[in-house]
Amino acid sequence: MVVLICALSSLFEGFLECALSIGKRVNGFPLWVIEISDRPGEEEAEPAFKYIGNVHGDEPVGRELLLLLANWICDNYKKDPLAQLVVENVHLHILPTMNPDGFSLRRRGNANNVDLNRDFPDQFFSLNEDVDSRQPETRAIMNWVRDIHFTASASLHGGALVANYPWDGTEDKRRYYYPCPDDETFRFLARTYSQSHHNMSLSKEFEEGITNGASWYPIYGGMQDWNYIHGGCFELTLEISDDKWPRASELPTIWEYNRMSMLNLVASLVKTGVHGRIFSLDQGRPLPGLVLVKGVNHTVKASRVFADYHRLLAPGQKYEVTALAPGYKPKATSIWLSEEAVTADFILTPEEAISRGYQLRSICECGCKRNGRILLSNLFGDTNAGITFALLFVVVFLCFLLQRRVRSNLSKQRQSSSRRSVTVSV
Ligand SMILES: *[C@@H]1O[C@H](CO)[C@@H](O)[C@H](O)[C@H]1NC(C)=O
Ligand SMILES: *[C@@H]1O[C@H](CO)[C@@H](O)[C@H](O)[C@H]1NC(C)=O
Ligand SMILES: [Zn+2]
Image 1 (cartoon, rainbow, N blue to C red):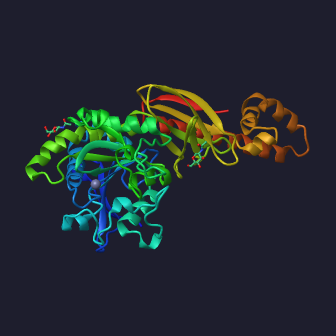
Image 2: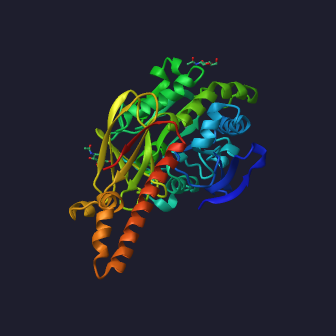
Image 3: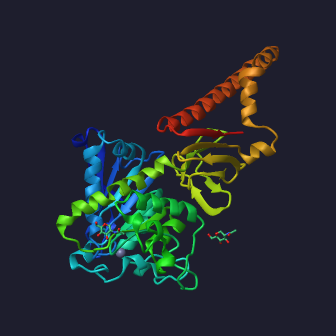
């Protein structure tokens, strides 16, 4: 259960920062999340990102950097373009510590001494099949991911300097490069972090400062793969400092090394990829369908309320993107994705309208424009003219509403972005 605890504004010139609890840790205290957005706690047709720190109790640098990140964005909103972009176009959720009990004990596991990054259901070898015995911290994250439609995320760890991406485990438990369907996109996201970092990309151990999880060391029950498989959320595991317990005086430097990486990773949700909404032609209403990319065996869901989708993809390529929803004819479009994001809205036609041999849109066009006057003059000679005229009036009015709705839905979506736009309709 998500409980909205507080929302404070005024301090930040009209933009809000919310703190809410996503669940409890072993000792019964809440796990606090900070949400940064111009409309926290509200649903918008925007991507959501989450940062999680201190998964391992003995890796505290992440929790410090996340608090610094939240403060920095608040302090620099309306001063720094990147801060403004994040606040206005992304819902950023920050859980500075996932394992406060482990932190108090200065150890890796939680109060039950369970490694939380081995406690998630695994695609190959679940170390923990028993749902009831799952740790409260793990359950809180799982419920949170079901509740909020996250596009991407990252968890922060310590003890190395590298950006790690799925898969984390292999099917035969041996160590080798084991790519997930979105390998190219993940490499792009991991590089976004490492290349913006002070010196992560200069690593001697990891080429470009990034690594496939399984080629480094396979793990099972990790949070990263679970997010991608079950939450549709592109998650990275970031190892942000070789030293797990640096002196407090070193934190400002480590923050400076990571600041641009942390911001650029969140901003990549807006600056790159294919985004848009899916609408139904018959009523112009948002249609929470699916988005597929040809050649990639991974489906992205549109959100329940606004049917907005955010398909992260490596830039510099052509993609064939298809939107589908049960009962509707799928629609595909080819998109050349350069460095900038592209907006592609889909308007899907109900299958039943197609099979009945008419499309509502053509009725609209007849009723509203082309045949309108002819129909009217014929009907007035009829005995039931009054009733027919009333019916015709209703049809014309409904058509008008439908067109206006679709148009306003589309323009609302576009206002928020300056992306290149494609609308894929009939
Ligand atoms: C990155 O910089 C830090 C601090 O200067 C240094 O300790 C570390 O060895 C460097 N790492 C790489 C991979 O260059
Ligand atoms: C796509 O992925 C699913 C698992 O998510 C798998 O069962 C299926 O075989 C894959 N299809 C192809 C064509 O690789
Ligand atoms: Zn760790």
